[in-house]
Length: 211
Ligand SMILES: C[S@@+](CC[C@H](N)C(=O)[O-])C[C@H]1O[C@@H](n2cnc3c(N)ncnc32)[C@H](O)[C@@H]1O
Image (tube, rainbow, N blue to C red; front, side):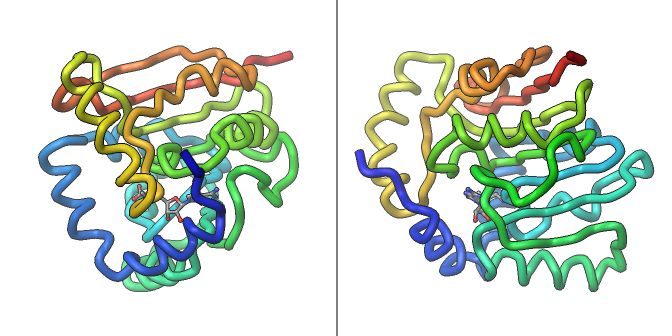
C-alpha cells in the first residue's frame, strides 16, 4: 500500500484543520476516554510535542513543564494551535513547522517527547522513533496516547479491512502498534495499557535509559 508523503499529510490536515476538533472531541468522549489528559500529565521539563496539531494538549500542561516545542507538518493545524494559545493566554510554547521523522532540534535537548494520536499518521514510524530517542536526554520519557490494532480477532479484521481507506483519505493507520518501533529505536518500554473498545487505545511510556 502506498504510504502518504509528507506533502499528502500536510494537504490532508490543512484541509480538515478547521473541522478537526469536533470529531476529535467525540472520539475522546466515546473511545479514547482520558488518554490525552493521561499523556499530558506525564510530561516534565522541556517538552517536544510531535504532531502538535490544533494544540489540544497545550492548555493542559502542568507546572512541571518548563517549555513546549510543538512541531507539525500542517500550517493549517499550527494556525489553530497558535490561536488557541493566544485565546487561552498560554505561554512557554513555541510552535514550528517540522517533520517528526527529521526533527530540526538538538540532540538530548528534551526531558519528554509527547505524541497524542500522531504516531498513527507518520509515514515512517521507525524514523520518528529514532528521532524521539535522539532528542531526549538520557533518562527522558517518550509518552504516547494512540489508537491502533485491536486485542480481538474480529476487531483486527475489521480495522484491516478499513485501513486502506483510512490511509488514503485520512493518512491514518488503524492497525499500527507503536511498541516494536520504540524498542527498535532503543527505548525501554515501561508501560503499555490497552483500553477503549476492543483494546484499540494505547497508553505507552518508553524510557531512554542512562548510558
Ligand atoms: C490526528 S492529528 C493529532 C493532533 C494532536 N496531536 C492531537 O492530539 O489532537 C495528527 C497530526 O500529526 C501531524 N503529523 C503527521 N505526520 C507528521 C510528521 N511526520 N511530522 C510532524 N507532524 C506530523 C499531522 O499534520 C496532524 O496535525
